[in-house]
Length: 72
Image (cartoon, rainbow, N blue to C red; front, top):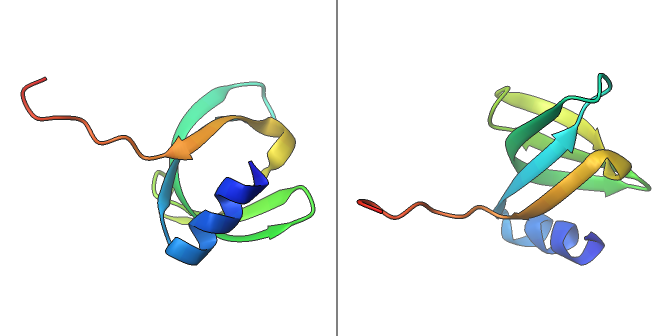
């Protein structure tokens, strides 16, 4: 995951993430990673339209944004 996050910083690639919040609720987020500090990811969250911090231990899944095909 570290390699993916570091690469996303350099390329400014958007990532799709499933995240477990403090209330144990999962959420789907689209983020742009701004920085990594130990086990914290600082990113712009497109869902909330602001910069947020995420604990790496609460990231359930993360990867490049998958584009949906039209008519599929």
